Length: 361
Image (tube, rainbow, N blue to C red):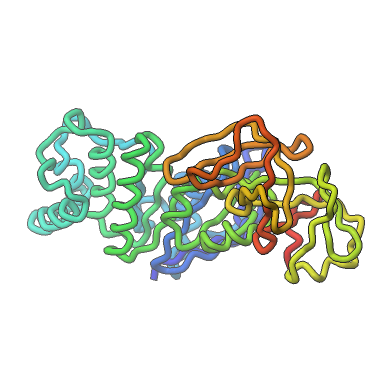
């Protein structure tokens, strides 16, 4: 077993508290992504799991072992960094096998492991090349291969795709997912890219300012965000927010909208909270351009139209508040016009304006 247990882990540098009493349980064989903006503490947490950063308090378990004060080399982990960290004078094969040679693994087994990893990563034809002869994506595959040949209990990835262009990031995400499916080992992966988090993770840990805001599946965080932070950070384009107040009858009076918005049955428990300031959250797909206005509709001042191939994003304003709506090509409101958009009431999110936490029961 190689699950990871984080118990009341904290980290501070002098008076600055980076992490404070975090608890996290990662199951054996699970792919968990730590996601959040720069400075949220995700890389610090990963480095503490690796043993590269000491803890200020708490306990870290890998499987049944307490590794809080165990040296990195004795934790049975392999780490892939943002920088490839390859030896420039060694071939790809030599880079991949170097750690095994240091641990005095038999030569035949080294060759077998390197060949197996090379097949998995489709770099068999690159094994004799030096790093300077490889592209960025090829170097990252070699770095992954160096981790795979060790056959660790736990893989740690620290923003491994940040230095790659968009096309390479897409292909490398596929390779990492394929590796996890083949190896079935526990993976802890750090990124600030919410697309990587959504596409790779079994579970996502959303972090902000040293705290865990939400833990759940990609579907949970996208469709049932616990806070304004999670709702705005997960999803591209980001969720839009409109200010309003709860009013009698289970409705929301939105700024700049004459008719109160009726809340779906899921929010029936909020009837007693009339007068509470709220933020109404809407994903781009919750809007539908509807000049005929058959359902609940709002007027949007169209400021920008962004064609994106199979879909078009309209950026506009409602009473000075910016929203982003998704449209289909060929059915897009004219730029600069005031357009009617229907809101899918079953796709709304509601947050307390003061605490910014979800009001969904």
